[in-house]
Image 1 (tube, rainbow, N blue to C red):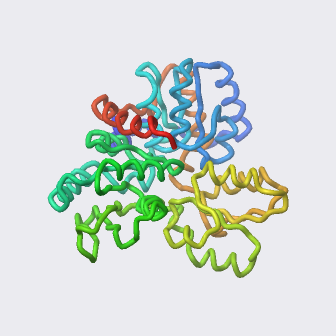
Image 2: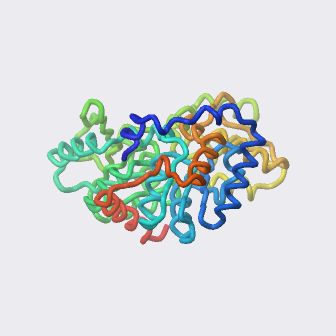
Image 3: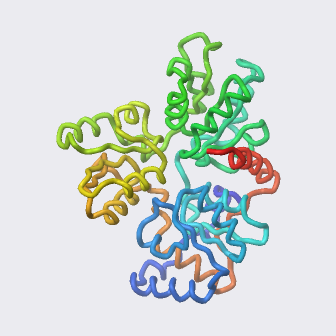
Length: 369
């Protein structure tokens, strides 16, 4: 059952009793169930999750890292993935058929991943083949659906993370003359630019209009960027940077490469979530930082580093709304249904899709960063 089919049912909805339980009661029940299941239960928690959930995570990290840790945890029969849908899909792809992957709330999707569905991608590919011939290699950010990963796998392409995007794009150019980068245009643009591809050699594919947006000679196009973005990171602006520079000129600005090219260019540092965490960790006491990434993580970094002055680059930024759908009540509900011998909100990727998605993932994992 895919996410759309599941959302048409009623059994994904949180029962009323969880809306009236106290926080203390819910926390005690989660601890009790975790202790009862022991090694049979594994709870990975993404960096962007709320503290009420992260406190119970057996591992925290980025999406691919958590999927890999889930696969490595062979004793776990149940993996309750505290993240979003595409992350749970990747965990299901990498784990064994006997392991059950559960998403506590099926509404926890990703707006970026949803900006590239397989039907749009297949239409785009046909038109791009007509325009450019067999000169394009597809790459997809791991923040994409299993079907998009499978598409890339079936056409010789690969997945990328924000940590290894540079090495993967460089590899892609050894395979084909051009790349199609899905679904985040900003990560694709920033990565290709850092590798020396001029902005005027980058085109944009608009999946809504089914057209290539490019003003020059299309023979000059080297990178085709899917018109998608992260709704969180796109809200960091050039004006945010100007404000920080004016009010706190000695403050370092560090952002995620899902931010726009203009924001990344004006920042002092840019890199993956892990890069941001590690950079702040290694920074001197008393140093000052404005961070351009998801607010739950920024707040956690601030809490973990009282010896530094840290703010969000955008003081009005909201947490990732879809990620926040995974909360303490939904986590407890998932665990109590398991305790009762039931499985709700299981994420299961079809074998044909999983097999091709594995090809794309392995092409990335087999290469040095």
